[in-house]
Length: 439
Image (cartoon, rainbow, N blue to C red; front, top):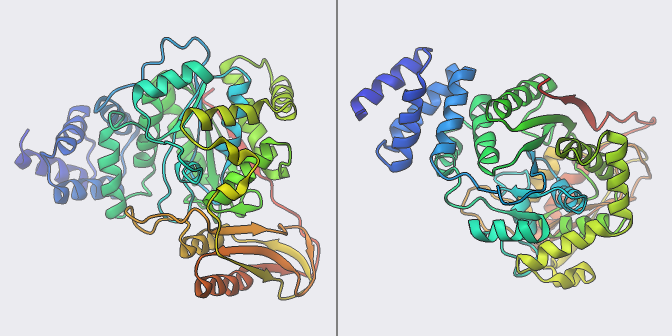
């Protein structure tokens, strides 16, 4: 099929027609090989964004992206292979706490994760705050580590869904990221290519998520669950609240501290609630737990006896990281300056806006405005107060860690403007809105 014929495909999708699987396969294969120029591919993606892909087209796109590379062969690992994926949020270090606890419970967790782009954090960026830790493992290193300790958190290899990497970069450049079918195909192609048997999705909804309403989040969740079923990967989803940051820390190195503290047993209530809810689903999919009560009991045990912390330490060691960080946080990069954001009035904290916090962390250097940006692992926030708690005028509600005084002061002032304080007590919204499966 020539570029001339590809123009006809663009035109037909622009006019709202349904494309065949072969036409979608051609686009993915030819663009990945460099046979279709960016300007034509961008036009095609915009046509898909405006007129949307139906499920048959979405399935074809997912399959084509899987087929553009290799599927991780985990057949020699006998334990159940289950992963978890989050659509991204502010202060979301759940994977770093959840994966060791679930792996310590007997599940093989091959977690191939991503980096941040914009205000939502990336699991790989958080891990790279640990000195010397490698996140670019080869396929053979991934399999060997899974055989030895049952857990790996690393970037996808260059051979897993190479089409998705190239298409996602163009989607980001052409403002076509928010298309639900394109999102579903991107996420599920990578997760299916991991060779897992089950997948738990944490679909974030709210101010600090790219999905702002439950209805849209539910549509995406159902689409991904259906794709999982098509490719024989049992998939379930939780729709979860991302109106405010998870836990008390936001920022790559700071979230590593909170991860370790959580695994030591000093775990924030909202982190524990979400970690255990997702963990129960992973243990149910693996059939290690017969019901949620048994799953929760097992996770409680692995948290209490330190098995989750030990598994995290084993992962850090296996990936070349400095294990001494477990008891010495000074080994992480530390910011030069600390500022305190204080309450402008007395009352109850109604909201700490996750979107505002994410964008302010980006201003400090804790995220990427463009793909090439280098992240500052030391900057971020520690929240001394959370929504629903009482506070007095002038009392500090957050610590701000910065490496530039001017930026630190600016972020302090803006954070104080964004906090909403009510004169009356606040009823908090639920953390978990809904569970969705394919049954």
